Length: 324
Ligand code: ADP
Ligand code: MG
Image (cartoon, rainbow, N blue to C red; front, top):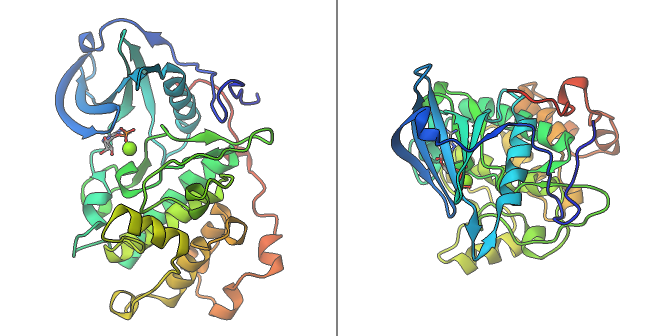
């Protein structure tokens, strides 16, 4: 069944299959501590009373800047419904609505954000762990892209782990800024977080699935080094570095790393979106597959771009069936 974009809101979905309950959600869940806080949402750990299972309740405010944003929340629910079929995208369990909030009951990712394991920490992920986790992140992003969904807010705060430490697996969250890309619409909007946002987004140029690849290039760099490649002393300096700066691989950060990982990051952080590799091509890159190839053979060739490997497989295509 085809996706139904909302004609009045570019890039938004409207088809929501999950039953939305108007009962108080606290009748069914015991609320524990707050585990996350965004501009319009508070995320609380909770326990389902009937099963004793842990969940995360994302309580999202409907009114923002004097506007009713319920359709935006419905778009987030629709993307979560599509994503619930994938092992590395967070599962949506139930939805409740009050006059002021929508409450999304989500699978609980016990390991928290990868942010705490990489940004500014000396003891960041090893190359082997980065590669293992990045493979899972790429599988999740590739699934979204095959369904024409661009996440647009890929950053370490939105990439969670199922368990503490290096053993956890990836769960991608937060589809609040995501968009459905269709041929009819061309989205030009400033979205995202300065360190991770692609140059075309900052320049009001058309957004595409390749905007996510840029963000993932930055995420990969940060996971490997603990340092953000474009971070300046001020927000403006960071934005300047993103739009003008060439990527640099200082020897003190990269001397001990496989040269294939520099090749991989360089191919994701191309200034022009059309020069970047796709999520599928990332998955096929020797640094990710672990198949050692002489660097000469992994430079972009016409065949690499025309190999047909971007064709969706049956598993990747959105079925539009309710998962709960
Ligand atoms: P926002 O749209 O406000 O950024 P998010 O969906 O990113 O909201 O949630 C905010 C934070 O809450 C996340 O960065 C993460 O730390 C935490 N969080 C969100 N969902 C979960 C979850 N399913 N399990 C555990 N923690 C979560
Ligand atoms: Mg978030």
